[in-house]
Image (cartoon, rainbow, N blue to C red; front, side, top):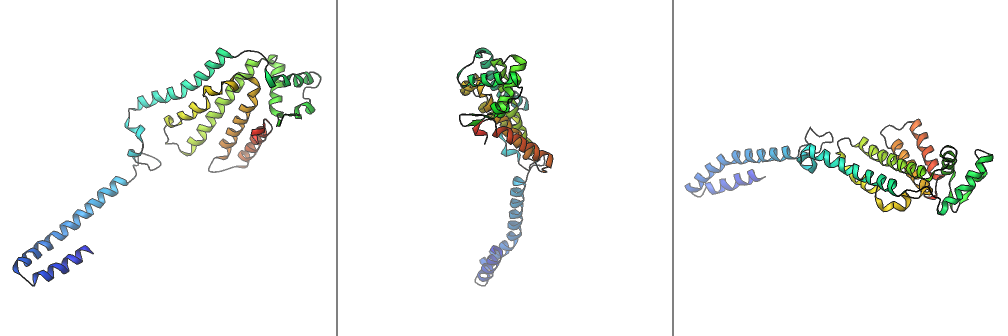
Length: 252
C-alpha cells in the first residue's frame, strides 16, 4: 500500500517541475531498498522469536533465567534446596522424638489389645474415631505392635518416609510431562512439604494417618497423570484413593 501511494504521489509531482522529476527518480531507486530493508527486519524479528532447537519444548534461551548461570552453580543450589529441608525435617525428628503415647494415640491401645485375640479385629478396625474411618492406619498400628512393640518413634519415622515418598512422586509426576524443567524449579516443593512448621504432626505418631493420605494422593496422581492411561494404572489409582478415603476424613 505504501509503495503504490508513493508512486501516485511522485507521478503527480513530476508533471509540475524538473526538481520533482529528480526526486521521482530517487524515489523509484529507494523503493526497492526500503522493501529489502523491511524484509530483512522481518527476518530478524522472526529469527529472534523462533524457538531454540536445543530446548525440547520449544522455549527460547531467553525465557529461562537458570540457563544463564554456570550449571555447576545451579546443581549446587538444587542439591541444597532439596537437601536442607529434608535433612532439617529428619534432624527435628531425631532430636525431639520420644517413645511416649499422647492424646488420641491412646485409642490405639484398644486396637492393639483386640488384635491379641484376633489378629485383625474387623469390628474395632472399622469403628469410627470421631468423624474418621481409620481402617488402614489401624492396620499399620497392628503391624507395628507385633513387630516393634508399637514403638512410637518407629511410627514417626514411618510417617516421615511416607512424606518423602509423596513429595518424590509429586515431583516425578510433573517432570514426566515436562522433562526440560530444571530440577531447581522443584525446590519449593521440598521447602513446603518438609517445612518445620508442621512439627506438631512430625512428633505425633498418631498423625501417621495424615501422611498416609498424602502418600495415597501422590500415588493416585502419579498413576493417572500420563498420556496413555491403562486399566492397570486406573485400578492402582482407585486402590490408592480407597486407602486415602479410609485413612482419615480429609482423604475423602
